[in-house]
Length: 331
Image (tube, rainbow, N blue to C red; front, side, top):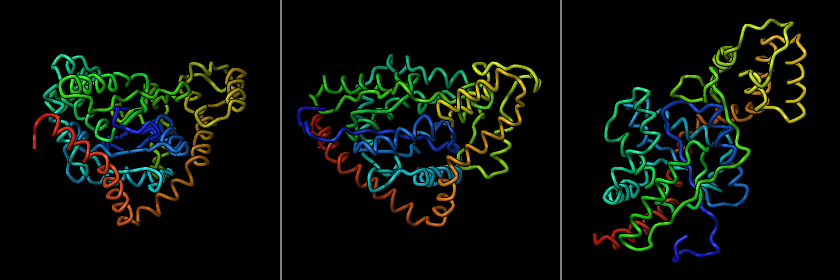
């Protein structure tokens, strides 16, 4: 925290999701579970829908509007309580883009050229435009505008927070200690969620198992999990099985051990494992799926939640932007 912040203030946590596709198991086990834990611990939590970021990969007006609204409904259905956290659209916080420009003026080109995410996306064939290149600066503005102390990320995303810290330090060195330097929050036990093809589950790889697909589509996705050609009678190594890696996400330690033994002992068909994944999926997420169907009918309520969340974020972002303007000499 900066010297102007209270030492007794609640820790501030921020995280965002890009609404460029439907939420999936990777989002749930890798992020949403942590969001709920932060809320329960009493942290000041800001969870936003990064619709400006989505423009780097999605250029379909109606689809972006649909996915942004859908992600908000997903968050609410999964248990994020808007009375205990702020859920908002990135575009409803105008201070973010203003801060981004100021940060751009102190960000060295070399810092952005070293960003792993930029290199990876270009390698995947995503067009190399300025939005993609400058993505880390907008991300820094998202984090810094609410004075976030912690940003939950996976180990592979740690560089994002390091870049944000570098940018904030460049600004503070030039203009004084105005911006709060965030820390990455990387829990030791965070789940690594494989996709249907064995790679990391990602919308970019089209290998996801969606949280709110209808039953028919959900079964199609689960039954398309890639397996080897081992017969039912053969022993199978659970540590090399993508199917087991997904199943164990839903299991207790005792259940994991029991399933691992069944893999090794032979006599287990992959169809039975896929049915077990479907059953456990419905047991875990069935209540959220039911809540989502109700929330789909309450569009006014969802909009009210988003506006209320943005207003809450602006109680921090607006005065911070006034400090930034004063520091750089803009009235």
